[in-house]
Length: 100
Image (cartoon, rainbow, N blue to C red; front, side, top):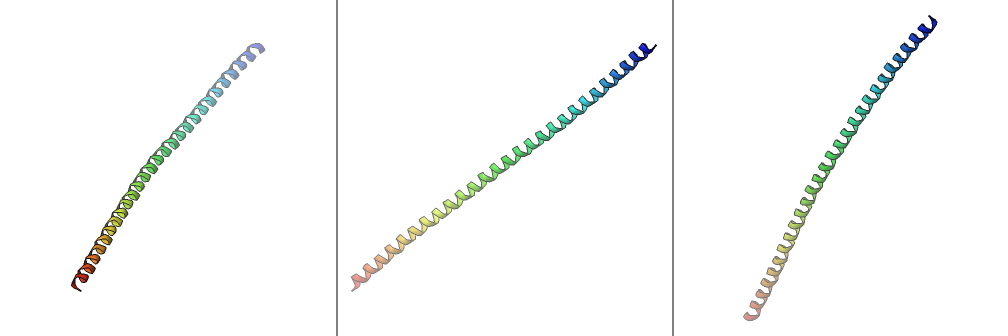
């Protein structure tokens, strides 16, 4: 009888251990799944932030290039005006010399 009780007790203990171990494994798996989801969210957020940063940088670069072109065009216009003013001044001076 003692042997039977010991065997039953051992069987119940082992069954209890198996259930406990299974619960621990389930908790571990659930924790890992949750952490993997968090990691994926971090990766997705980082990827989105990088894309936005790249888009912002491209827009900023385009704006800077447009400003550069505008400044060059203004400089070219100013150079042409200087040339025209100098030509007009020379023509005026030459006309005054002819009158004298």
